[in-house]
Each structure stands twice: as structure tokens, then as C-alpha cells.
Length: 385
Image (cartoon, rainbow, N blue to C red; front, side, top):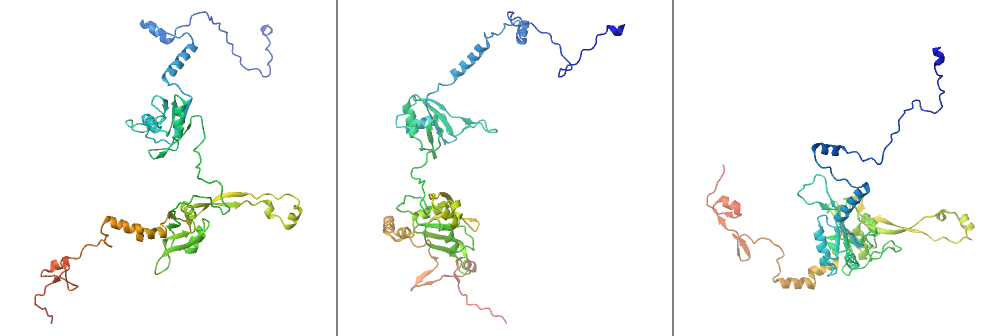
């Protein structure tokens, strides 16, 4: 009978959990006062007053935001970004530089805010001042200070060329106006010729096996070469490791010193590899324009050795400095001409007589060895059997 009173097990439902947790629902009375916190209970136990609580969480956040706004200085819409600053520069130095170099347009009152971020390097000495990150944001009260600050861009500050632009601009440093973008057919961009530009360069750090033909082939891309001269050993005739190259134009020498020259090459297409039969079939089609590309041709290495390239003094300039009118005037202005050599005067022990020098005599052999004099003859003669 006991078996009949037992309830039959309920059928298992597919996908149902094996074990169900029974959690009773908790009723929360929102009208009830908030229970005291652990900190509040500790204060009540000690008989201290409870700390004040904000009315709501939103009020708490508003209070913090208000404090931050009071601490931060107001931002202005007339702001600039200054880059490439010296790392040891301070905000006071930057403010003073802007005021002194603006021609009276920027004043201390016109600068509303200077933000100069600093980098705190790990392990640095705490007594040393932190270095800045090389840039700063400066806000002005009106647009006049902003325009005057941007006009100071590319001005040097402690031997560093500054870049000053609008704070909302993300453009880089502007390209130079005298820099030509288009190349000539020979691959040499146009350059402004200087009046006293040299056409000769000095080439150093060459190998002993280098020949004049090697140097000529290496620099012929820069321009027309007048002559090539290598310093050689008298016995073997090999290169001493240095020489000179004379170009026809000073622009070619300037490119050679840079170590590379830009050349213009034609881009090969499928039409360059077509046969004659294919070209006859395509006679009706319009001819395509040829494309060109510019690349750098390096001239700073010969036989795997990095060359030392410098502008040498032109022959005519060198001759004028030594024997020209300027050299004579310079020597006359200084007074008497300097002697050709700076050798010390002759030994005082020697006296000129009749156009010849007569050495002095001494009796001490040690003195004669030190001074180079002749030992006086004593009249004795030593003979050996």
C-alpha cells in the first residue's frame, strides 16, 4: 500500500535544467529610509555626527564637474598649436618670447592660456624640472593675437625652427617655395644659380683600386663632367683614396654633394613589348601618352664604400684669394708680409763671415754634443800599434 501512495515521478522535459534553484522574491519598500552604512554605524557607535550626504547621485556628479570647471582655465576659440619647441622651454619663456617677437601685437593680457605638456620620465631626479614634449597650445583673447602668432611660424627659437598653426589644423609643415617639384627631361630639377657657387667637389674615402673611369661613371648622372683627378702613389700609381671632380655647372656639383640625383624614367607598358604585327592591328586606336616616374639615383658609394663628398674651392676663386687684388690689399693692411715659413732663427753660435757660417768651438765634449759645436783641438794625438 505504501508503494501505491507514492506519487509518480514527473516526466523530464527536454532542454530543461537538471536542478532548479528556488529563490524567494524580496519585497523592497522604497518609502522606507535608507539603512545606515558601515561607516555611519561606526560613527554612531562612537557618538560622532553623521557625514552629510548629497541629495542624489546626479547632484554629486554635478558638484565634481563644477569643481573641475573652476580649476581649469577657460578655453578660447582663438588658439594656436606650436611645435618643435626646445624640451627645456617653460611656459614663462614661451610667453615672453611671443610678447617680445610679435611687434607689440601680443601682450600678456592677450594670452589667456598656455598648455605645455610635460613628460615625466621614470627614474629621473625629482630635483630636476620635467622636460616638455616639444609642443604647446596657446589661447588668445582675440583673433589679432592668433594671427600674429601664426605669422611667427618658421622663426627660430634656440636654434629650432618653430611650426605655428591653428589649433584645429592638422596639416604638416608647408613645402618650401623654391623647391621645384617638376623635373627636367634629363632628370635634374631646376635650381637657383649662386654667383660664387663652386663647380668642383672633393671625393674622399675611396678604395685604392678606384680609377678615374669609376669616378666618372659614378657621377655622370649628376651632370656633364669637365675632368676627374685622383691623387695617386708615385711608385704603384694606385689611388690614395681621395680626388676631385670638376663639373660644367654648379648645380651638378650641388646634387653630387647631396649624395643622390633625381632622374626621370619612362614607365614601360605593354605596347613597348608588342610585335610589328600587333602594332599594325592597333593603328586605328588613339596613341597612348607615355608615363614617366621620378626616382633617386644614389652617387654616394663606389665599390661598396661610403664616399665623403664636399664642395671644393673653385680654381678661379682659389687663385684670386692667393694672388688676386684682394690678397695684396689684405697683406698691405696687415703691415709687413708674413715670412714664407715660421722656422726658428739659426743657431746663435754660428756667425756669418764672408757669406759663410763659421761654427763656434768648445772644449767640453758634452756641450758640443748638445749644441752641435766643434770640439777645439788640444794638440794631442792618439796612435794605435
